[in-house]
Length: 240
Image (cartoon, rainbow, N blue to C red; front, side, top):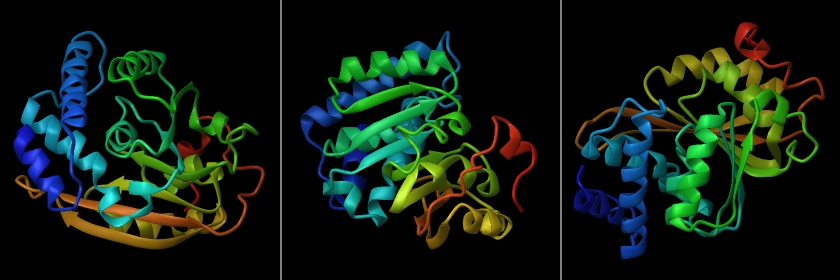
C-alpha cells in the first residue's frame, strides 16, 4: 500500500487526510525504520507493508466506533510498542488525548522522539508494566477507551486493560485470526473484570486480505480490587 492508496482507502471510510497528516505519517515511517536499525520495534519495515499493516490497521477501530473520530476521549494504549494503534489514531483524530504504557524504556524513548518530531500534543508516555499501572490510582478506572494490539490472548488481555477503563467506557482489542476461540476462552475473564462483549467486527485488510477483528468490550461495573494481579501472573495463570 503506497501513500496514495493509503489515502484513497481511508477516504472510502469517510476519513480525509490533510497534507500535514500525510507528512506526519511519512516522518513516522522514516523514524521507525531508522530507529529499528538499533532498537527492535518491528519486523515490518518495507514502506508498503508499514502503511498497510501498521498505519492503516491501527486506524480500523475508527471504522466501527464513531466516537473515536470526534470525541475528546482519553485513550490508553497498553503495550503500544512503536505506537500502534494510538499514534496513527492521534495523528488522524487530534481531539483524542492519549496515554501510552509500555514496559520497555527503549520503546518509550523512541515514542518521545516521535511525538516531538510530529509536533503532537496531549500524548503522555508511561514506562510501566500494565499490571502495575492498572493498580495506580491515577490510572485505575480513568480512561474512556483502552486499546491493545498484538499484546496477549484475550483471557490475559482483559485483566491488563479493563481495570483502567472507567465504567461506561470501552476496551478495544485489535485481533487477527482465531479471535472466536480467544473470546470463548476469555469469557470468564471478561465477566470477572466487569466487562461485557459489545461486538466482534470481522473484516479483511485491503490488498493482503488478512483477517482482522475489532473486539469491543463495554465496562459495566468496577473491576474487583485484586485485579490486575502482580506482573506476570495474568499470563501464567489466566482466568479461563
